[in-house]
Length: 305
Image 1 (cartoon, rainbow, N blue to C red):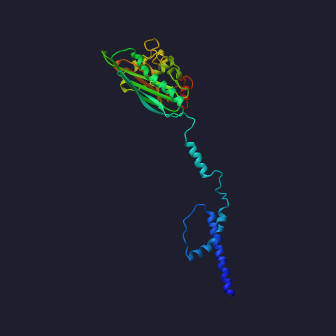
Image 2: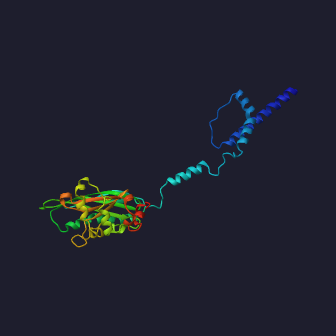
Image 3: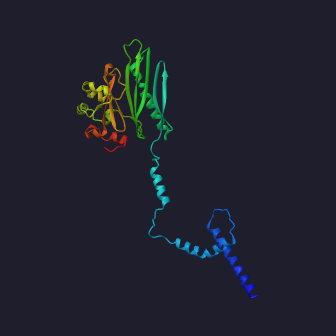
């Protein structure tokens, strides 16, 4: 009778232990898990190891002083991700090509799309189109005109845009077509056109610098004409550069400026024999500080002087 009672009590205690273990396991996991029935031997092994497991878990809850850190790995990951994300306050956009065609005239020009500021997008797009179309000032009222102009973007950022236009214009009966080149540089923060005189000191000292080897011809074929081409540059050309408004007046200039990641280029009008125009570039790193008119260009390019 005592053996039976003792056995019964032992079985009851064993059941209570198993029940408590089951409740502990359920409370330890909020995710539903697939149940797997244990064998009798596995249940026995589980019961024997419960106490050791609890002691191990308790010891693991103690802070590890050697590896403790206020910043968790998740926080570090979030900080790294945050640093990689672009500044939401920056003006963002994409460029697409538009084409104006009418009566033998074809002018391709860029337009902003998907911009973060729609009002700014509209204003910049109007400026881009108007400046691209001003090539028609060369041919105002001319009949029998065939004109084709394409563009290339040499610098693009949230702050600054530099666009080059090149093409040919032919008037019926002329001896040869005109090789055309002009540019548009835009301060995207203030939605203003930037001209050469806005960023350099357009004076005699610049002319002397231009005549040196710091300015290199872009077209290798212009190397043999380099001295002659540079001698023709004047301060007036520089001061009136980057405008198609003065055609046929004393403000007329066939000098245009463009910018790239590493250099500034100046394109001068030239004779038909050398291609109608010739470009020279100077690397920013080779340009003396006194050449620049303040820090405006560095603010636009976001480069250190």
